[in-house]
Amino acid sequence: MTASLEPGWLAVLQKEFEKDYMLQLKAFLQAEKNSDKKIFPKNSEIFSALNSTAFEKVKVIILGQDPYHGAGQAHGLSFSVKKGVATPPSLKNIYKELHSDLGNFIAPNHGHLQQWAEQGVLLLNATLTVRASEPGSHQKYGWETFTDTIIKNLSDKKEHLVFLLWGNYAKQKAALIDQTKHLIISSAHPSPFSAYNGFFGSKPFSKTNNWLVEHGLAAINWHLED
Image (tube, rainbow, N blue to C red):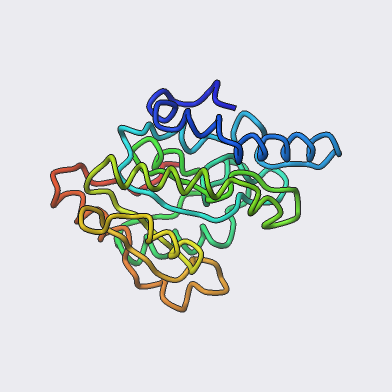
């Protein structure tokens, strides 16, 4: 499971792959595949968030919960879908808030967020796989231990990061983050069920860039080219 991991992340996480919980997770995933369960994303994209944003380049973390569970949606980046796939409702609401927050943001005709990842935005799901059409089906099998380790390492080893924690699940991760040196921006989740309860109007994107610039870092260009 480590062969294709970005070198900086591999140095941080290699020992995790030798731990019992990870071996049990690997066995669980193999059993799922042996029973002909359809798992998303495909094997080569499970660690796409880490491979798209090298450890040394991470500036912002947007934490999701589960990969998308519909065919063709999940590709390893939280909230993102590849070009040609319909933009999911939560991402449409993220685009709405971007327009409200930044004023000049125009939603692209796709939901592919790779351009953010390449600028240092780690698009991390707490659970990295899911069974088709069964949201939450791979929770509590070990992925959360692995991704909590990622969050803790980022908090401990880096400075002046921004963590965007949307929804109650993500907010629980604040306990892993040293708030004396990092910024946490939390709000309701952008889902249509909760976006009007505090996500809209929270201005996370301008707040992120203000923090980065204040600490001598380049702002994120949130605009996405078609």
